[in-house]
Length: 174
Image (cartoon, rainbow, N blue to C red; front, side, top):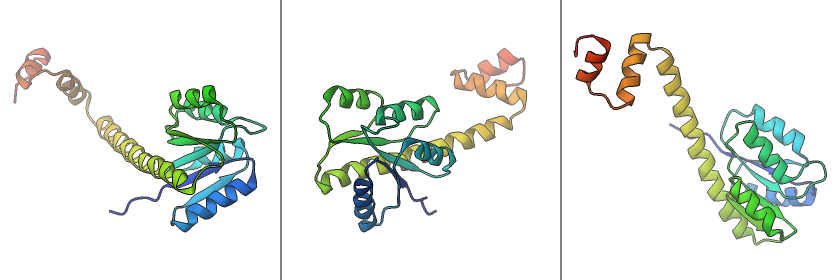
């Protein structure tokens, strides 16, 4: 089975930054899309059906990278991401990491440093997407169970043996 490609979303209000990053990612055959502000980026995340990860600028005029990160979290998106910042703001970096960011790079950064961070979030995006698909498949299968089968499954999940379940539900252990 072919893996779905991971798309890297780049959010920075400076077009020359995103242009350079798109070029760098294109050079290693990595799919990316650039956004100059939060609103179109958030809309793209809401509409995406495959694995994605993101690189956020810390300081932007309309909405900061931290505000974007909080919005993603509040909306239930488990998007692996890291931050870029021209300002070495340690409290902001700590806050970003505490909220789940994978890394925090200060501009200017070395291309290899950027690619290493991209590879980490790229791998995480694929893993999280696969895990989410597996959970969704399991939920679909559990939804098909009869109420009695759901009771048995619940007791199995709680660690009861077949014999104990049969006694509790007053049914045959077979």
